Length: 240
Image (tube, rainbow, N blue to C red; front, side, top):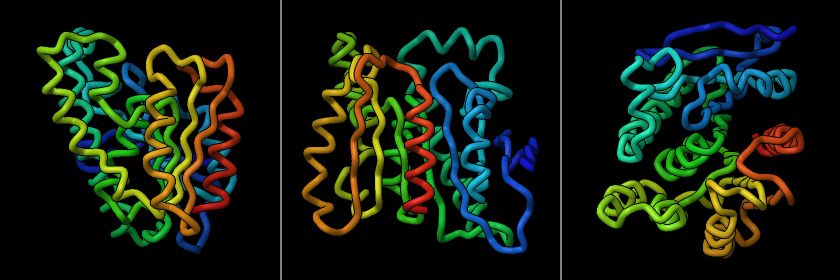
């Protein structure tokens, strides 16, 4: 039986999803939704992981879901507003990692992280900052905000903002922890070529220690398809 509980950790509203409670400490996956979505958008996928004995913590990002107001929703249309949201979500991951490590019911040595789109970008940044995260799965993500700005032909006036964000992703600090990247081959939002370059730049740092894998889905755009969910489930079953 799956238990879903709505909680607030510090100022972060979230769902905690888990199978029947066990006397043993369980592994945890923190799951991050995409831009313009909310924590409810990930609930359809949560049951798959919970049935493996993994507890999921699914927060609302800043200015999303329960943390949004009417003004916030309007502001999301402005590109420069993305920066504080990304940095705020990165701070939220830090808060949740510390919560897991100090809990008496979670296994603080078995923390996974996954995210979709914006959540995938933060997954890469958080793995850079938190060696406590054992493994990650980034869906529909990109490793460089500057590449994103160039691809979408944003004005060069705002490029310095995106360059600032790129300071938070350092591919050399992720290995040897296992990392899975799942991208649509026809994604118009997060071009797969960028993440291919990231994998090529990073692969030699893994060698025989750890694993990085990119799976491209032909004909798929900026969307999560069932096979991505299955791949995510299998990855955490093997690496968490």
